[in-house]
Structure formats: structure tokens, C-alpha cells
Image 1 (cartoon, rainbow, N blue to C red):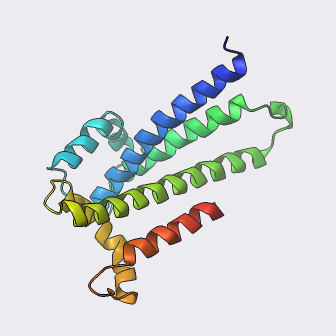
Image 2: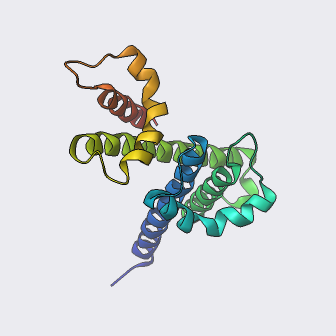
Length: 185
């Protein structure tokens, strides 16, 4: 028999999974536009088809500026705000009358922390996928856009860390650094 506690746990798990999936897609769309990655391939079409429902209406309110798709970032922020708000609403807190501006600040900091965590996971996934594709299937349709996404991220490290016996260690160094950053968050 399901109790109300286990039902809210299941609701949180489901909303976190779906919300994180779409939030990562919004962030990926932002990264693809920022990195000038073509949306013509499978990855681009996938991202566009799953995010247009939110981005197109938001662009009427939040236009792009400086070649940056701000609507994608706003969509990711609003989605995370809704999830963190749901999380706070299901958590017992003090009565609303005793809450002050600290609660709003805590809510915003939680949203930014979660967004940063998702960006780190996204970068880790892109770098890991780029390394795997370069080893096993460099001619995959995903190889070019993934490489375009990871190149600007790895470029500063590649200036500092030279290849060892022809093997690029920068993805490994970046993944370790991002793991440490996740622990600190």
C-alpha cells in the first residue's frame, strides 16, 4: 500500500527525471547555439523538436542578444525554479508568515546550484561521449556536433597539457576536475 510519503517521493522522482531531461535539453540548445553547432543533424533535430514548445513562445518575451539564445537559458531557469519550488512546497517549513526574503534568496541559490550541477553533468557527458566516439566510431553522425561542443571546453586544457605518446589526456583531467566540482557543490 502506498502512503502519502511514498507517493510524494515517487512524484518528486518523476518530476526530477522529466524536469532534468528537459532542462539539460534547454542547456544543450544554448550550448549548441553559443558554439555555432549546426542543428541540421540528428542531434540538432532532436534538441529542436523537444524544446521548440517552450523556446518559441519564450522568444517573444526574451529575444536573443549577441548571438546568444537567452530564451533557452530562461527556460532552463524557469523549469528548475518550478522543480525547486515543488520540492520546497513538499518539505515542511515554517508558516508563510514567518518567512522573509531569506527564503527567496535560498530558493534562487538552490535553482542556480541545480542549474550549475546540470551544466557540469552536461559537459561531462559531452566530453565523455566525444572521447568514446573518437576511439570507437569517429565517423558517427554524432561525432562532428559533439566534437564542436567539446572543443571550446577542452581547448584551454590542451594548451597546458600536451599529448603523452600521442594520447590526449585533457578529457580525463577535465572529467576529474568536474567530479571534484560536483563534490564541492
